[in-house]
Picture 1 (cartoon, rainbow, N blue to C red):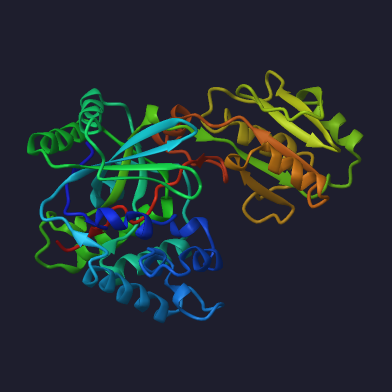
Picture 2: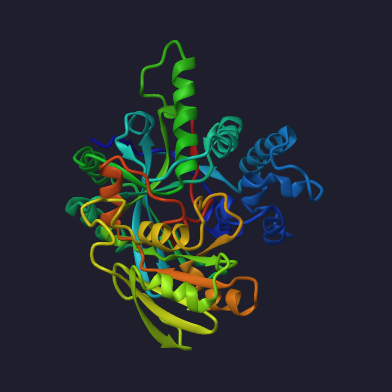
Length: 415
């Protein structure tokens, strides 16, 4: 059963939220962060990407960069740009994109739940990326940025969300990308009790986005537990910062592929090979979006094509085999184009659906890429099924949008 607790959040005063809040550390590079934080000493980038306070080109893994994160985190608190709540709370964090709003509950999630796989993952993590974020958590003794969880729908928690969000939000702003962010504090003791008790009825939480941050946060908490001879399990370091969304609130968007060459084939030869496993329908020059599972969109030589996988070419009973990313990786990228490792092959690149299929067309028309392949998005049911069966998603399968904004609330590992 999922164990969560309220916590004394560290967060900006209401009138500073737009100055402090930032995009997550891993969606932009150092120069982009430097540009976004220019002229704004309150930007959270000074804590989560502190290399921006050094000369351009400074290695973000240099020890002095981590030291700067600590210095800046302390300064933010001393300056009153981040203030710790007097009491333990849960919080509601909602995001609006394209007229649709999803509501999550901000909790302190349990380290043991991650170690014992009650917090389920669907992606592999890289140790070097884990270690970078572990250093950041260790040196600040805090989870500066939240991780993104999903949970099976729960009527009582849905009622809490509805009740709390009838009130005016503590924070309410639209970021420069046009996405809305709304934040409420849950301070009613009975409601806080309800949240804790209802999560205890939920067997598993699912990592939607942020596998490396989740691993790093949990592993640091586990380190602290092992290092403390008087460890009880109730210490604040046994928990880490998460925003948990009911699964029905979330929508995974497509994650598409662009490829530099046709592996020596002419376009006509390539299409002929595709016809062995797919029904190919020309769609002309107007952008074509895949409209169902096992339907793909191909852009080649200025033309769009609908590709529908033929019966018997995939296994709907296999949680991995049923995925369109598996079908396309095996039958097109591997068997026809000779691309075997999506993580390392330089002939392929990936484009999040948030950028639209226009971006696929642009990259092919420019001559940078030879063809593009758009996929129908994975569903939350598929994601949870893969996690439940202990399977791992193929690389570059899921894209969640909007991303969680960082800096709305922080969790300290010592209260």
